[in-house]
Length: 276
Image (cartoon, rainbow, N blue to C red; front, side, top):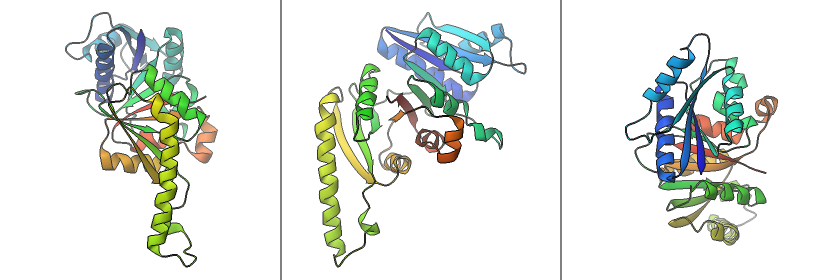
C-alpha cells in the first residue's frame, strides 16, 4: 500500500496538489490518502478547516480519505504527521512568494525538503493527466541509484516517456582555449566526450529503468539547476524528478540549493527523492 500525504493551505495552489494526490491514489489502486491543513489563529478552526479540505476534493475522489487539521508551525507539523503516518510521498502546492526577511528562511516546501527524509512533490500543474513525460536529473554516482530505486517504488517510471538528464562540468567548446584547434575540431572532441559520458550512464542506469515505456538520455554542460530548466524549456515534461539531501537554513543561505532554485523557477511538477 502506498501512503500519500497532501499538505494544503486551502488556497487554489493547494487545490492542484489535492487533485494530484487523488489522481495518484486512484492510479495506485491500493493507496491511503491523507489531507493535512495546519491551522493558525487567523485561519479557520479545526472542524471548519476539515470541511474546507474536503471541499477541495475533486469529483471522483475515492472514499475513505482522511482529513487532519492540526495547529502549529507548518513545516514542523508536516514533518511530524509524515513520520507518524509513515507516508511514501508528501504532496504540496507551489509556495507563495515571500517578502524579505521571511524569504531568508525559505518557503514551507523548501524547509520541509531541508529536513525530511521522504519524497516530496511540489505541484504546479492541473492533474488533468498522469505524468507521462518525465525527466530524471542524474549524477554519475550511487546517490542516483538510490533515487532511481525510490522512483521505482513510487511507480514514477511505469509506462513513462523518460529522459535521464546529466549536467556535466566538462567545459563547453565555446569555453575552451583553442590551442590551434578549429571550432570544428573542438565540437568533435566535445561530441566524443559527451558520447562516452552518455554511454557510461546508459550502461549504469538502463537496466534499473525498465519500467519506462521509452528511455532517452540527454547531456548538457553547466550547473544542474540551469540544465534542468533549459531541458524543460525544450521538451516540456509533465514531471521532473531529482535527488535532494537535507541541509540547514544557514547552509542554504551561504551556498544555495539546487532543489530550492528549481522549486522557484520550474514551470512543471517536481518530485525530490532523498539521497543517502
